[in-house]
Structure formats: structure tokens, C-alpha cells
Image (tube, rainbow, N blue to C red):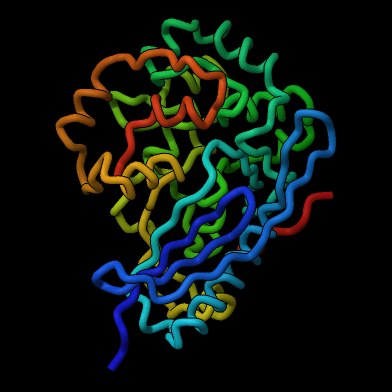
Length: 298
């Protein structure tokens, strides 16, 4: 008789993690594959998205082996991971450059540009936050300002865990909490902000559809199954960024397919500007938590 397990994937800054639990939440097995970090210049922080996928696939295989489980024992997959990082892909979904991470600090001029173009007060009303160096939007502008040849090839923007989702399912998608951490997301409408995208001249078609955390975003492909040991067709849920997932884990919020009354109240009014300059600290205040093989860059 097949077991019924659930797989959690965490694409963190230091490791690609896989966790198997049973229906009662008991841990069946876990595995972590270490990831490397590049700092090619002062204040820069980058990673290779291909390494996330290789590490994730390795950790899934290890966890299945440790649990003496098979791919068909896994009923569903959930995703979490580091927030705010920029993954730029071309029209064939090939990675264009190393991902710029949440703790990268190169985008001070771009943050000022965002507040100048959108207006600080209007930005806070729309996305619930000011422009900070860790967020995704300033990174997009940095690439446009400093690597125009890369920017011209760009067709899709993803966050770290969502690149792993793409490799698992072939589908581009993002959860709404991670969307809010880009500062391109209108909190009240819970969708991409037309106003901010227009003000910053970022193509709306570059951004994937967003989903509530428990919603299904795709199924494991045959190619991904061959690399991970999972069963083709296994559902992959939207999940959430690490901060919002942590809020669910501590019981601060409950996962649901629709917003709770407290979330609706929070998203209907402007958020307070965070005191901290830390982008990750800011994201926990501003976000409204809900519960293809690429070629290397030149």
C-alpha cells in the first residue's frame, strides 16, 4: 500500500531543502544540498539559478531515499524560498544572468528613481512600501540601466522558488505574498499594479500569474520526474515566500484559498513605512501573506 506523503521544498540562500511529512505532519525525512554564493563586487550578492534546480533535485532524491519512499507516495508538493531575488529569462525561458538576491545592495540609485517616477506617497498607497534595495523592482531597473543587452532579451521575471517551480512544472507562476515583495503588486487588488508598471515602464507581460498559497499552479512534468524521482502529474501548489510561510508555520496566519478578514482589512488601507532598512524585515510588514532546462549566460 502506497504511503501518503507531502513534499516541501525550500530554496534558501544557503541550501536547497526537501522535507517529507505524513498526513499528521510528522517528519518522514529531510535533506539539504548546500548552495554557493557569489559576491563579484562589493555589496553584490548573486546565485546561479541552475544550481537551485540541481540542488533541489538532489535533495528530493535524498529525502525519498531516506524515507524509503517512492515518487507515487508523494501526494503534493509545496514551495517556499528566499524572497525578492530577480531571475531574468528570455523568450525560450533560458536564464540570462545570475540571479540578484534579496541581500544585494547595488540598487540605491534605482530606488531613488522609483520614488521619483512613482512618487513616494503614491508608491506606499499602491504597494504598501517604500523602495528599498532588496526588493525586486529596483533590480529590474538596475539591469535596464547597466546591462541593456541583457534587458533587451528579457521576457520573464521570476523569483527564486518560482524558477524551481518552472523546472518542476514548466509553468511560470508566483504566489501573491511573494508578488507583494517585488513592490510591483497592488495590495488592495491583489494583482500586479498597472500604475507602477506603467510609471516604471516595465512590461506587464514579463510577470507571471499570481495565486493564493494553497492553489495548484501546475503538475510535475515527465522531465522533472526523471530528475527528482517524483511521479509525473504530482500537483505543485503556489506556496509562499519564506517570511509568509514562516508566519503560517508559527500560526500567525492561517492558509486559505481566499483572504481572511484581517488580511482584507490590511490590504484595504495603506501600510506603514517600515522602520528597518532591511528588505526582508520590510517584506514581513508590507506583504499580505497568503497562507526547462536553461542555458548558461555568456
